[in-house]
Length: 202
Image (cartoon, rainbow, N blue to C red; front, side, top):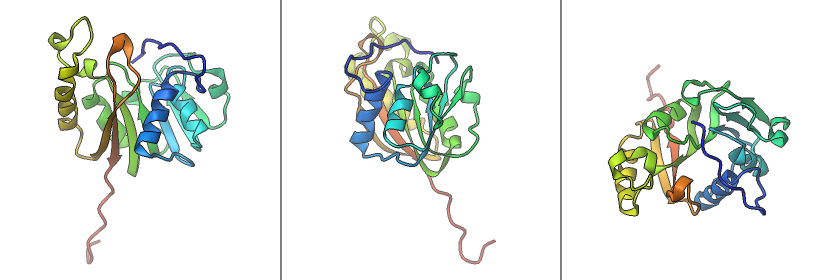
């Protein structure tokens, strides 16, 4: 799950370029994280975590398989709870979450989304950064880049593999390219609420 580092722009207000990516998604979808309990899955240096904190999140669980990469300003922030050397596919948060953000590199969405669903409270939401080149068959790639015309097919596959507990609320192309110049797509999902008992039951 460890990702190649992307160059951080000099004027970036976050500890990593990922913060710019997430800021775009929060604004695009109109997501307000103020006061929410969140998780940043695949946190790396903490761009997403920093973005969540700067947007008012009450707590962020920052999870990554690596060790020592999370920025010092975040690991010393009382609102950030660090889980290093931790595979998110086998991690259970200490509490159910209001909001989850994830950038899990080459981990396929069909594996990540069911795990995310289990972490969320009913009606909790998640933003997953889909990297289509890792979802596609190898023979679709040209020098490790997925051609533009293949992206709709890949996203249709992702939609078809989304677990029934999650409802897709929207998709948006990130304005920032990923590793090797590959496109990235934000997927916004919500965990369905638990149905209320029918009258006379229970």
